[in-house]
Image (cartoon, rainbow, N blue to C red):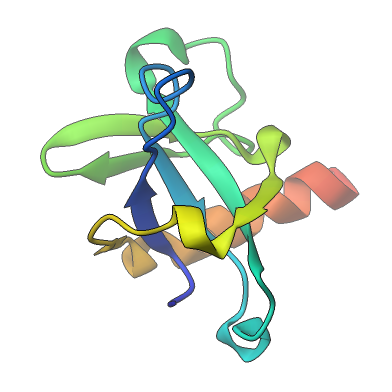
Length: 104
Protein backbone atom coordinates (compact mmCIF):
# COMPACT_ATOMS: atom_id res chain seq x y z
CA UNK A 1 0.00 0.00 0.00
CA UNK A 2 1.24 3.44 -0.84
CA UNK A 3 0.94 6.64 1.11
CA UNK A 4 -1.57 9.09 -0.42
CA UNK A 5 -3.42 6.42 -2.36
CA UNK A 6 -7.20 6.82 -2.45
CA UNK A 7 -9.49 3.83 -1.97
CA UNK A 8 -13.21 3.53 -2.54
CA UNK A 9 -15.30 3.21 0.59
CA UNK A 10 -17.23 -0.06 0.28
CA UNK A 11 -19.30 0.32 3.47
CA UNK A 12 -22.94 0.73 2.40
CA UNK A 13 -23.75 2.77 5.53
CA UNK A 14 -21.15 5.49 4.87
CA UNK A 15 -20.11 5.32 1.22
CA UNK A 16 -22.56 8.00 0.09
CA UNK A 17 -21.22 10.54 2.59
CA UNK A 18 -17.58 9.41 2.38
CA UNK A 19 -16.99 7.82 -1.04
CA UNK A 20 -13.20 7.61 -0.60
CA UNK A 21 -10.50 7.15 2.02
CA UNK A 22 -6.98 8.58 1.66
CA UNK A 23 -4.28 6.32 3.08
CA UNK A 24 -1.85 8.64 4.88
CA UNK A 25 0.18 5.98 6.71
CA UNK A 26 3.87 5.67 5.89
CA UNK A 27 4.73 2.48 3.96
CA UNK A 28 7.36 1.63 6.58
CA UNK A 29 4.42 0.41 8.68
CA UNK A 30 2.92 -1.89 6.03
CA UNK A 31 3.17 -4.88 8.36
CA UNK A 32 0.41 -3.48 10.58
CA UNK A 33 -3.08 -4.81 9.88
CA UNK A 34 -4.63 -1.33 9.94
CA UNK A 35 -4.11 1.90 8.03
CA UNK A 36 -4.43 5.53 9.09
CA UNK A 37 -6.87 7.21 6.72
CA UNK A 38 -8.76 10.46 6.18
CA UNK A 39 -12.16 10.42 4.48
CA UNK A 40 -13.10 12.46 1.44
CA UNK A 41 -16.57 13.96 1.02
CA UNK A 42 -18.23 15.91 -1.78
CA UNK A 43 -16.94 19.46 -1.92
CA UNK A 44 -20.48 20.75 -2.48
CA UNK A 45 -21.26 20.68 1.24
CA UNK A 46 -17.84 21.80 2.41
CA UNK A 47 -18.06 25.58 2.03
CA UNK A 48 -17.93 26.13 5.80
CA UNK A 49 -14.79 24.05 6.32
CA UNK A 50 -11.45 25.85 6.81
CA UNK A 51 -9.47 25.34 3.59
CA UNK A 52 -6.23 24.69 5.45
CA UNK A 53 -7.93 21.90 7.43
CA UNK A 54 -10.04 20.51 4.59
CA UNK A 55 -8.22 21.07 1.29
CA UNK A 56 -10.02 20.29 -1.95
CA UNK A 57 -8.84 17.21 -3.84
CA UNK A 58 -9.79 16.43 -7.43
CA UNK A 59 -10.38 12.81 -8.43
CA UNK A 60 -11.52 11.89 -11.93
CA UNK A 61 -12.87 15.39 -12.57
CA UNK A 62 -14.85 15.62 -9.31
CA UNK A 63 -13.93 17.80 -6.34
CA UNK A 64 -13.81 16.39 -2.79
CA UNK A 65 -12.95 17.88 0.59
CA UNK A 66 -10.37 16.05 2.69
CA UNK A 67 -11.71 15.78 6.24
CA UNK A 68 -8.49 15.87 8.25
CA UNK A 69 -10.43 16.28 11.50
CA UNK A 70 -11.99 12.83 10.91
CA UNK A 71 -8.68 10.98 10.79
CA UNK A 72 -9.16 7.35 11.79
CA UNK A 73 -7.86 3.82 11.31
CA UNK A 74 -9.49 1.03 9.38
CA UNK A 75 -8.44 -2.57 8.72
CA UNK A 76 -6.14 -2.88 5.71
CA UNK A 77 -8.41 -5.61 4.40
CA UNK A 78 -11.11 -3.00 3.68
CA UNK A 79 -8.86 -1.09 1.28
CA UNK A 80 -9.29 -3.29 -1.75
CA UNK A 81 -10.74 -1.31 -4.65
CA UNK A 82 -8.23 -0.07 -7.19
CA UNK A 83 -6.32 2.77 -5.60
CA UNK A 84 -5.80 6.15 -7.21
CA UNK A 85 -2.73 8.14 -6.25
CA UNK A 86 -3.13 11.73 -5.09
CA UNK A 87 0.53 12.21 -4.24
CA UNK A 88 0.39 15.58 -6.00
CA UNK A 89 -1.62 16.79 -2.99
CA UNK A 90 1.00 15.57 -0.50
CA UNK A 91 1.88 19.05 0.78
CA UNK A 92 -1.80 19.99 1.22
CA UNK A 93 -2.53 16.77 3.13
CA UNK A 94 0.47 17.13 5.44
CA UNK A 95 -0.35 20.82 6.01
CA UNK A 96 -3.93 19.88 6.98
CA UNK A 97 -2.65 17.28 9.44
CA UNK A 98 -0.15 19.77 10.84
CA UNK A 99 -2.91 22.37 11.26
CA UNK A 100 -5.09 19.80 13.02
CA UNK A 101 -2.33 18.95 15.51
CA UNK A 102 -0.47 22.23 15.98
CA UNK A 103 -2.96 24.85 14.83
CA UNK A 104 -0.49 26.39 12.40
